[in-house]
Image (cartoon, rainbow, N blue to C red):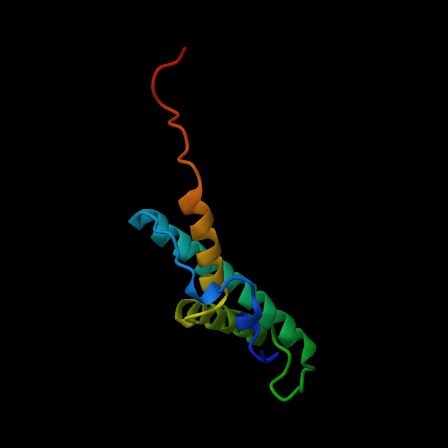
Length: 114
């Protein structure tokens, strides 16, 4: 086997694993939460990367420019989280959907009291 084929060397073929089914509401909520997490994470990465680039001074160092860049990075992060087919959100969704689908149903809080 070639060292370039990492998935082929795993004891379990993760590319063929099936994702357990959740209800429609659970599935939509989990997918949205995973996308939001990816957007927040990506935004933090963008902000930290921008901090590493020295200011050129050409456009100045205004508060407005930094505010605009912050909003721009938020939009990039949100769009990337929604449009990436195999990004962080997809991995989180797959992992948590397995956990949630196999978890026991929570007990009902309402009803008779002893």
